[in-house]
Image (cartoon, rainbow, N blue to C red; front, side, top):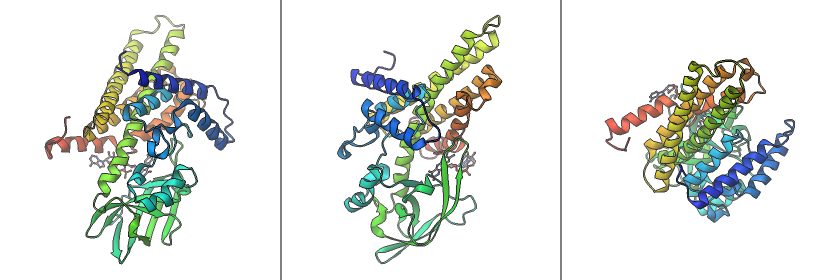
Length: 367
Ligand SMILES: Cc1cc2nc3c(=O)[nH]c(=O)nc-3n(C[C@H](O)[C@H](O)[C@H](O)COP(=O)(O)OP(=O)(O)OC[C@H]3O[C@@H](n4cnc5c(N)ncnc54)[C@H](O)[C@@H]3O)c2cc1C
């Protein structure tokens, strides 16, 4: 078996493949997205996939890095991995919150009763990073966050804030607090929804700091790393979907020679890039599972996976022709969705620069 999967991991792959098949055969009534989401959720629970993203102590399956990679890749190979409802909400940063905070926010969040956002990116013209001043038992927060996915529906935002004399901290801020203002709500080409917020003298209790003040950047990066791996796993599955689609198109074409040499070279290039990205993502998942520090490998995997799917989709559209740009064609939808992956959770250039920094300035990391 080329992926060297254990028996349990092979079984998980079959479960995810079967779920992907079921979802791809569903009749989707686009006028009722909530109903589709609920139907997918039920199928995913029955297939043993939904709870993979939730820790065992919350009744989940506590999926490992490899298990999550297998599940996400298998779903993306059928081009359904992006649909809402497949994976349960995961505690993310809140797993590091105090017992009281978990009761108040994490339990209803995992039950689907309240929603959250992640506040990291700031407006490019910000004069100062979002900051907080301690006052007695409270923190007074000022600043802005510019790109909070799901922000319009969020009940709270886990926000990176510079606390004076203490350093960066992740702070839970309810969107209903006085001084929190939703400035703009917008959507991006991939179809996801976001909002920008300002914070003007927002007061929160000090207990809203998640973990210790000063560890905010580390906490935020833990969250970012797991999302980077999720993006990478989804992209390598999509690479396979796109390669399969092009292979089917080429095999069924009636032109002679079929395909011509130039197209064969293009297709070989697609498959080579898909192979490189996939190898990197699985290797990184194994390193995470072995408990290694692999921040560089995660960045490299996210770069290889997101850049390869962007390139493969572009080539595939060129090979298939104008039909691929019709809105209902899967390549048109993938083209829109994958563009965001080269920016979200760290743009490719920034990640490349960080990988250089590890080697040149810090003498750290294996790559
Ligand atoms: C679909 C989507 C969802 C998102 N969701 C969230 C969210 O929930 N929460 C959140 O906080 N943010 C979110 N973001 C924002 C995302 O994290 C930022 O867009 C991304 O980090 C880039 O930041 P920026 O847009 O400010 O661009 P900049 O950081 O200004 O980058 C612009 C350009 O400059 C280059 N650049 C910048 N710094 C460096 C460097 N040090 N070295 C080399 N090149 C550099 C970049 O590569 C890029 O080409 C989301 C973005 C997208 C597209």
